[in-house]
Image 1 (tube, rainbow, N blue to C red):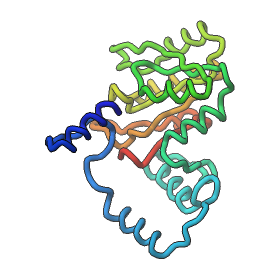
Image 2 (image 1 turned 90 degrees about the vertical axis):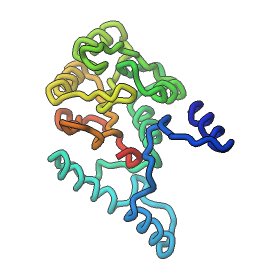
Image 3 (image 1 turned 120 degrees about the vertical axis):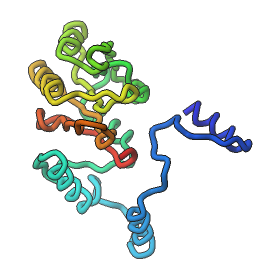
Length: 220
């Protein structure tokens, strides 16, 4: 955000800036989305939605998971938040108590630490290895559990920020099985799903029906 602030200042001073500093599209919103938003503003009575989000959207998301991942998930399991950060806050505050720990492979997205610190939850950094593309492994998780009694969950991100690496199907299965064996909650940041080159990203729900998935419309 500091880099973006400086880039905006340079742009305001007349410099031509190519913005590569934050993870967001460089194009306008899709025409269909703009048309739907305009129609809602023109015609709908805009008020409070259901606490868990608009029912039609939750039904459509369930359809998306069937079409994309082959997973049959009830619309009741979806919770719509204003941005993924709100989803992380709900997940962290609902799953963990003050003083408990969440294991995260590092390097990682810096805001995880900030959100956890604000909730008095400890981020337990697990130093990733280049051979594993800086993703969590069974060995890292087992070692973190042995060293930290307060460990209650594991966070994965695939594709990951900032490394861009992914967990393959076998690797993700092993991580999910390790979490189940140790009684740890698995949280999967799947915001960058859809932005892949060869193999599609794998949803953690394929291996852990109780995993918490955080996703977003903001990237793909």
